[in-house]
Length: 349
Image 1 (cartoon, rainbow, N blue to C red):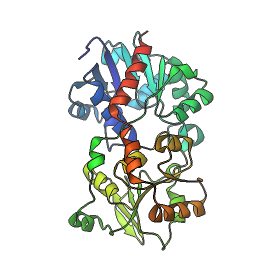
Image 2 (image 1 turned 30 degrees about the horizontal axis):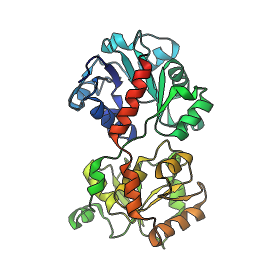
Image 3 (image 1 turned 120 degrees about the horizontal axis):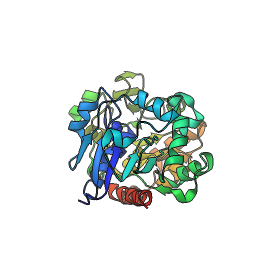
């Protein structure tokens, strides 16, 4: 381990049910642990002890229990407390979830996953836009998951493009060998033999209302996997939150995965479905076109007729599964970690 590169990483996203940012943070620090001294710091009081048990092998949690809300208020108005006061000395501090803590000497790196919070204030705390703007100004390097987000960050947050490092997310190897649920699990979750699948939170940003309007009786039932309560209403089945192994099996057994988002910074579920050989239907967004690279069926967001037609095409004339898997294999967490190390080195020079 290159212990001369000590990095304080915001590990708060590791707590609670794993969202996309939580999976990104976990996978990234697991890869970085062999090349840097990774210290995780959690901006929380309730999850403070749990972070110590969740720290991946080769990393450790540091710092006192401090609520994020208090810290954000302080950081919104100044540079106190600096991160070294909370987590000890470091060469780099990495804000993995939009916000970069102020520091005394550590070089700052912040990951901006998307800019949805600028267009829909209901998606985040009202102080987030100001915190992100101050974070990207203070950072010596800004990470984004796609070139599309990098361009948007450069334009809308006035960040020099050369300051931004694109760090694409990875696909876990287990996705390539995932198999559909067996009959016992299908019965447990009330799954039919054929189904369309939506994975994610139920909100307007992810486009679920439009998908529900586009879904019709001539299509297989729609299964929704996410944090909402499990249950069935007509041809819509909600599984609730699933552990990783069952989520992989759910995706592997789908007739098609649908990502009808209004805004996306990357779209990891699309790549994971391609890794399983499952057809993907997604909205025509720059980030999703960049990531899927011709291996998905796109439709114009907000057009239920176009979405309906795209779903039919996925069932009757899907893209080649083998080339989809090949595309998914180009995204690894090792590559994400290597690109992130590039950002760290920029922050220390």
